[in-house]
Length: 243
Image (cartoon, rainbow, N blue to C red):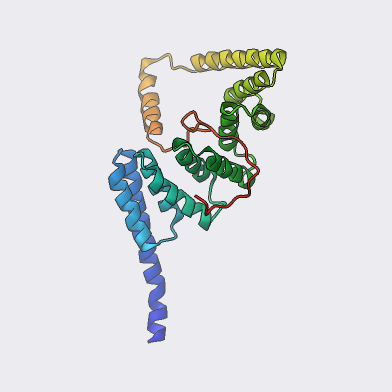
């Protein structure tokens, strides 16, 4: 009897993997179609088959977040982080957004700081934290976050503007003005580059529009922006169960 059960286990695992995968794909398609409530049902079904399926938890949390159900989204994202703190950086960003929307800035700060601890080069977390540092007038921490981004990408316009804002807040007006001018120059270059790459033939526009339309359906974290209420640093210890 034991041998029969053992022989049947691989088939059972394969069937469960297939069932779970197909359910997740169905949920993702419903997300792309904007049918978030139906997508939530798909991801919940997948989690019943495999409770530790983190991708389903993240996707369901994003659906809840999109529907304005921050409490439910928060529970899903927190569960992901509690199971695997290094799953991905986007989960921290979305969790921070949940707390930011409800005005719980200190908790959001802690999760973004935990994200940076896990993923030191993750620019969206650095930008998000820097932006809210500006909001709460912690200009020195904002300066450091934006400077970290600029050290890797000198032409990053958001980081350059944020860096200039931080310098202005610190009272270094001359250096702030220099960085504002730098940002303007970089923006002009980007515009010229964009214009030069615009298709001259109207027949070339169709595929470009189609690609752009499809890309807009993809779920993204809108790098570094948390409803424009973004998040300062914190020295608090990471405790993913606090919620």
